[in-house]
Each structure stands twice: as C-alpha cells, then as structure tokens.
Length: 287
Image (cartoon, rainbow, N blue to C red; front, side, top):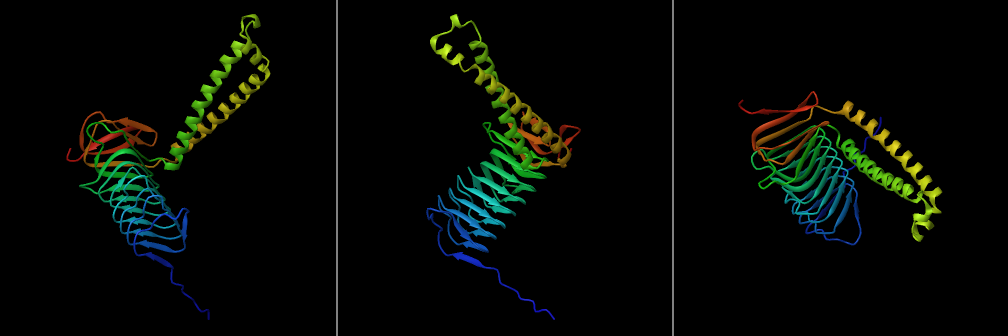
C-alpha cells in the first residue's frame, strides 16, 4: 500500500505595505499583501497574488491569478499565467494567460488576455489605450467625449497580433533604409567631377553600399515572407470574436475582429460587434 503525503502550499503574508527593495523579490507558493504594493516594487511569485490595497508603479509577475482589491493606480505592469481581477486600472499594462476582470473602469491601459476582458456591466468604462482578447471584450461604456484613442481587438490570439505589428514596423524601417541606400548609390555613381570632396570620399565606399543594398533587399524579402505566413496563420486561427457594449460607445474607437477593422463614427448604444465574411457586423439590443 502506498502512503500518500499531502504538503500544504506555502503562503507568504505581508501585513502592511510592500515597499521597493532595489531588486526583484521572489516568492514560492502564494503571496498576500494586506496593504499596498508601492511604486518601483518588483515581485515574481510562483503561485497566486492577492493585494488588499492598491498597486502603484510596480511590477508583479505570477504563475497563478492576480487579485487587486484596491485597484491599479498607474504605470503598473501585471503579468499572470492565469486570471487577473482588479477594481480599476489606470495607465497600466495587464497581461493574462486567462481572462481579465475589471470591476469599474480601465483608462489609458494596455490590456492583453488570451481568453476575455470583462468590465462591470453598468459601471465598466474602457477608455483610451488598447484592449486585446482572444475571444471577447465586454464593457458598459467604450471611449469618451472628446475623442479618446481607444482600440479593441478580438478574435486573433493577442500574441499573433502583436507579432504582426512588430513585423510590419520592421518592414517599414527596411523599406525606408533601402530607399535611402538606393538614392545614395545613385548620387555617388554620378560623374565624380560634379561631386563634393566629401561625396568623392564616400564614393570610395560604393562597393560597401552595394553590399548593404543587397543585404537590405534579402532582409526585406525575408520579413515579407514571415509576415505573409503569419497572416495565413492568423486567418486559420481566428475565432468567432465578439465585442459587447452594454451602454454606449463613442466616436473614434477602433474595432478589430480577426483581420477586419471598423472605426466608430457615431455614438452607438447597446451594440454587439461580430465579424462575418471579412466585415464587421453591428447588432443592437431590442432591434
């Protein structure tokens, strides 16, 4: 007969505030902070994190859920392999391997969840910043008056979408550098009698500039192929993403579902956004 041994999971409890120590703090098991997590504190926790106060401009990484009862006050970074639950969030970044739940509002935040992002059905304001979710985003109010740059993205896994943006930025930079190098080669290849002394010295490096041109061309081709491959993966892995606005959405909000994009131009009330046939569809409650 095998004797089964059960080991109680370790829980660290900090009775007051957690202050910065000048280095990242590591905790095995779960961590409970009865006060605030102050600015510049950095934590890496193997299990779940529960904060009864607020989180300032701090970094919290957790292998389990992160729960913040008092809210995330600003410039914080929360990264959870599970679910993140906060009272409110302002000017912060939150990443969740599961879902993000915000009890009141999120303003000017960068929110990324593999599953869904959900705010309070009556008080949940989502204004400013970017919210990316694999499946769904639900909020009472989205955007603000005057126009506040707000992006909601669902359907495509957030990791794919972020990588797509990175590749596009790299492609744009390569195109600019390629164009500048071509123009320089054309200039230095002109009649040397028409060149300045500085340009004639640079002309001695023409073979190097031509090598650079060849390298940039190969790099651009490589990144274009990577981008096309990623776009195909995104189309295959897109889900039936949905965005629900339970009260109203204001003009200027950008909606992306899978590869389709829509900019909201008018105030809309009690609307649900879905994607069908490469286009975003709007349906209204009670219509």
